[in-house]
Amino acid sequence: MVIILLALGFLSTLYVYSKINSFEKESLLKRSDSLSKAFDLHEISTLEGNENDLHNSQYISVKEKLINIKKVNPDVRFVYLTGMKGDQVYFIADSEDPDSGGYSPPGEAYPEASPEFKAIFGSGKSLLEGPLADRWGRWISALSPILDSDGQEVAAVVGMDIEAGNYLQNVWLYSSVPIFATVILIAFIITGWLIGRKEEKIMEIKSEMVSMASHDIRSPLAGILWSFEKLHGESDNFTEKQILIINSIESTCRNLLNTLNDFLLASPAAEMGKLISRKDDVAVLIREIADDLALSAQKSSIKIIFEESFPNKLILEFDSSKMERALSNIIDNAIKYSRQGSEVRMGYKKEDEFHVFSIKDKGIGIAEEDEDKIFRGFFRAENAKKNASIGTGLGLYYAKKIIELHGGKVWFESVENSGTTFFVALK
Image (tube, rainbow, N blue to C red; front, side, top):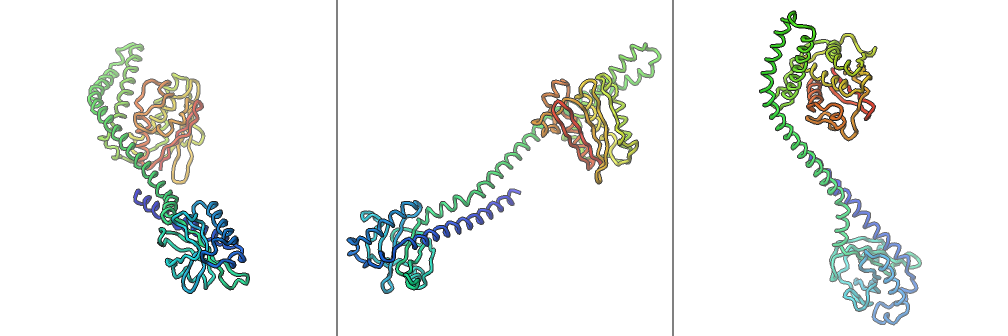
């Protein structure tokens, strides 16, 4: 991708250079063409083209005009009038002060004139040439003929010179904008990639650490749950109050085990890519999850409502255990972060090849600045921390991974303080 961007930036720079170079040269030629029309033929015809012109009022007038033209064209170094005697181009007048190193007195020959320059006196056609070198430096020159009253003969040629170095530097400066923009874009991409890699590395380290700790806790916890199963076989010997306490402790242990499973499944060492898929009823699975979470919902007087569109039966191919954890995390969040006395609505619609389930709550919502972080591992929004102090920040991270492994998609729409709707699209 970086190579493609660099290639596009380089080609764009060449294209812009071509356009700017062409535009600048055309602009210079247009100025010299306009300048050629500003001279009075009568003034030029009275000039002899030698040092006698220095005392000629017409020469002084032409000289002042050239000086003023240079002043209003600060990018131009020389402005001059030339004539031709035999096969030799000579200066009639220029814009320079007699004391300057670039001054050419009337009648001074210009042997550096190119064949194309000389040809103007015969063709009467304007010319842009350069960069070409002469005794004063390297120049881009615009040359335009001044025609006689009949438009047949060339009375003189007016020239405007721009320093080639400055000209090329300016053209390249403007032309380099695309490549500079490309380099900046690539720098942003690389910086983003490096930050992403750093975050992934931190995530891996965190996951590996909690994975090792979770493995050590998981085994004794499983033993405790096994003991509770044995106790259920002796339930006739317990009072109703004791049974409630045992069920509460067992439920807490199972929640802790599910949390540990989230940590382990989020670990890079976990085999997230291995799905044991078979055809099963996802609609029934979602209803069973809702039933399991009903007690948690009732504690906050939250109603779980299945809309009329929700199917009674829908057979898809998926890994039941993993999908159950993924969907449980989303539905449990909807209940956990809903306002007391509100409702969680379960919806469904078919969109192309996808079966789209919606879980809509009327809860605390997600702040706009947190929306792009919601599926990131170990992330919990500030309003979520205030509402529920306990949480791993792995539930939605795990849910997204599992749903995408099934070829599905998960996304959400949310308004802070109004509620959130999560969408799960499965094939």
